[in-house]
Image 1 (cartoon, helix red, strand yellow):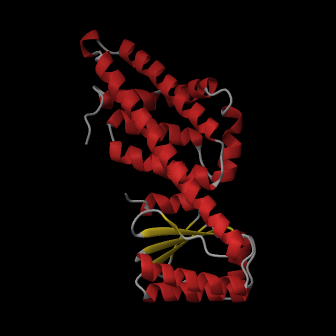
Image 2 (cartoon, helix red, strand yellow; image 1 turned 60 degrees about the vertical axis):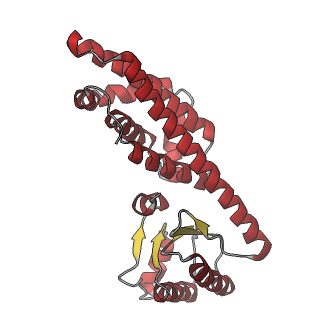
Image 3 (cartoon, helix red, strand yellow; image 1 turned 90 degrees about the vertical axis):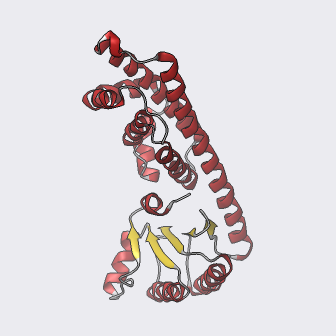
Length: 274
């Protein structure tokens, strides 16, 4: 693990104590983003304020591994929901400026003999912020390119957009209408890809599906049984209330080994390992 900022514990306590002031100052810095916070939360279930606190803690503690994974998760989430990159850039730069203002306040609040070495501190803080931005944009670009490629294939031949996240985990984002014909295509593509790519975990994101007939749901459950026979575990994300009600009324339920998450981001937190 990288060396942490001097007085990191005291600095973290200072930020925790002044968290409300930090948020107010951050919002005043992020002029264009502050009015978009609720919209971004609604679109992608991304809480910018909470994530700002996470970023600050990772920077203070020097948790570079966690910082990189957090940036990758954010990049995938923003790409998935096509949120404007300009908002992310402005938000992170606002966090950087606000962070420095509070470090200055912290330095004034402690005895002079405990004051932080500015040059060392500047290198640590800005390097970590830049590392976060680099990892975010790389993840965003990579995943966005994969989405675009998958969407093109979908338009061309109704193929199934299985998107690799790493060597063992893939995402299958289902968007639009899913009928029996398409589930047959899903079955063929999924089982083929599992065999060819040795997929160990398949995350099926259903947030783009508002309605499915009972026989389609039943067919998807059979496909998941097939993936299990091939040694691949299935994770379901983004089930909508309409689909859940259909399953309840039809007395359908997933196998007890099938994990479900409310959002794709929640699943990525557990399964995104680089």
